[in-house]
Length: 175
Image (cartoon, rainbow, N blue to C red; front, side):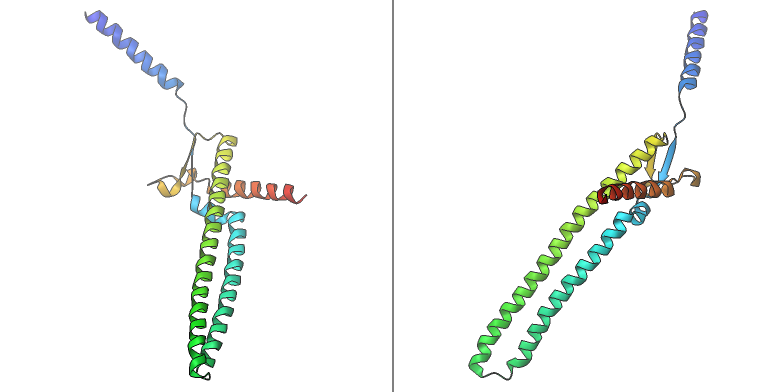
């Protein structure tokens, strides 16, 4: 019985040791996805486009507000029967202004959401490509990590990879 136990222990120990010798060491990287997002050229370009659109829409709305203010200023100069008609016109202008503002905000929000999904997909694809090229087994979002050694941080490399990929796509589209 002792002999069987010793043989079983030796076999188990040799199996454990051989399993450990075949286990490979994982290559793990950490990246700050928010930093990659902020430093991505496509994000920066879209921010500029969105800001220009916002300024354009605000200018249009401000022009409509100015027309309303001018009409309100002239209201006191009108005859009482004309004032009533003009007040109804002003009320309609105000509703139109609110609706135009609501539509502008909704359109910009939809455009922003669509572009953000596109940007996130680009970043995820670039991280996956980078991981495959550099033989990483795992890349973790730094913001979901309690601790990771600085030597694991590949954020700068990922930013370079995602921007390089974006520039290559844009160069091929312009040719």
